[in-house]
Image (spheres, rainbow, N blue to C red):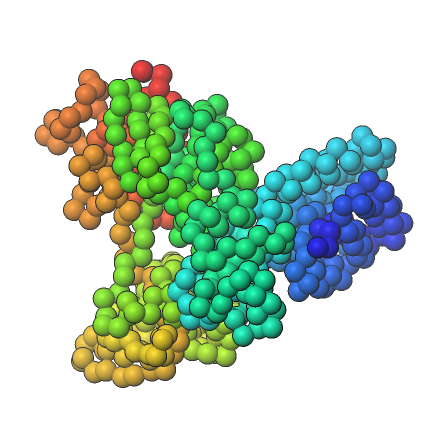
Length: 552
């Protein structure tokens, strides 16, 4: 296995040689140092590294360069290697630009030139960044290979889990010669897939999510039995609560059922989030928030499904599907919502075999030259349409209303209008699905006239409705008719506090009907369904947790 790459970029030949020399002298035995003299040259080198299945641990780029600045290069490089650590080389006069870049490209550090002696000004910084990268899932998951069938729901589930957890992998169809060799070495057949193989030869046939998480280095086991704060759900609200809880001294653990980021983590580009004028992908935003939470000492646990919540004296006890429990002084519920299932005949048979709920970005390269159908009229559907238009021959957006103005942000509507490959079909719904082993045809119905037509396609992505993941709280917390958790003033009706409320005060703003349990983000009744508001509620919940703990 090739050593991970450290790439240095500077247009000044003398500086370029100096930085590469200093890096190679200390790290050349463990890392391959690649030197580039321009942004385009560096990006081409990164593409070659990507194609070879190698990894990039660190990027060091000079700020002032012709053609492409260091900031522009680092932003472009994030799409290829989002987990690589990023350093900007700058003169003293440009430190303002370096500070601005911290938000724009998630800059890890900036170094003033010259950095001599490197033992004092260069190596300590690089040591800490490489140590942080080595502890990331990407470093642990060197050259993971997945063998599976194209239209296997089980194979898709493995790939989707890895992609949403930002774990790089190589996808091999069962008829690929290398796939055959891997199957033979593992003592498996094409009927046993998916097969997952790591670089050190460990092989798992049809692994569970928990087995897969352990294989790629994700944390699945808490280090303690009791915490100040347990956050349930790893979307924007949950990550916001974890960052603020840990940074403010609370012993914090976040538990997530599938992958951090939630629905926002699947967005190809979020362009109206404060502080990112050029937009940011959901994966990039999620990775930054996850790293931030870990930096402050929060624990992040994967593949943990909460199935019960109990009051145990002054503690709150979470029960998980594997029978284990976790106790804490307080809980923030940030489980978000899930997309509603389409009820048209035939669709259920093709889930994961051409019918997908959410963007399923891992499928996009397979859509090249084909027609893709998307159901939904909100921002998530619009972002998916923009993303898939880069691959598909044509993207068809199906909506039940007359236009997109009722539920989609104007910037996205304008963006879709400019993309020739995207067609919006108003007053249209899916009536039926058919195929042999996977989706091959859809029947579409005009909601005004009832007229039906059949289209050939193997790709349907659904973004409709929002169902809260709160069934496991039945009988524990007060919820509204749709299942959203009722909080704060909405719990007090006619001057009467909710049944079973044990405290002399009214519930805090985000507090549920069980004292010490708070709800944030999309799972909360009457919340604003936007990424920024979810992050804000996660932070606000932590401030209310402090008030609750101080009064105990």
